[in-house]
Amino acid sequence: MLELNQLYDGQSVYVIYRNPHTQTVATIQKATIKQHPEIQNQLALFLYDYYHPIEADDAIFTTLEEAEQLYEQYY
Image 1 (spheres, helix red, strand yellow):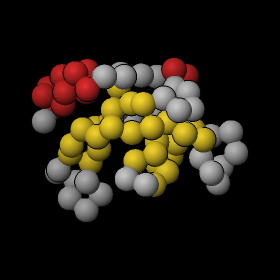
Image 2 (cartoon, rainbow, N blue to C red):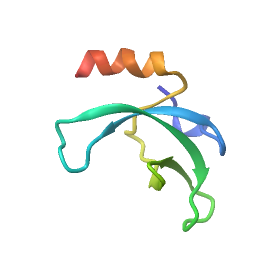
Image 3 (tube, rainbow, N blue to C red):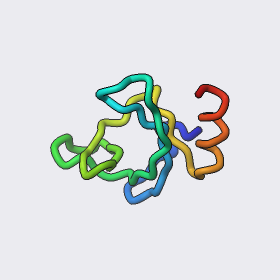
Image 4 (cartoon, helix red, strand yellow):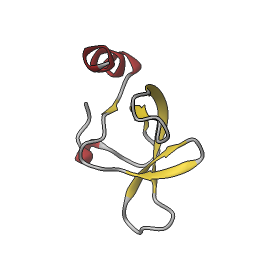
């Protein structure tokens, strides 16, 4: 799992994403790290055409395999 200081603009990552409408449903999604358009000097996850602020407890991975491995442990 990546730490916040390992992220950079333009990086392709995989995240374990919980459905905001059904908290018991989670999937692995590909996302891009981008500069947040409204918050200067802050990176965000660009996912589903939306900028999600990155938080310390986000599960962000460099490869799909890493994400699947943790997903299998918890889900």
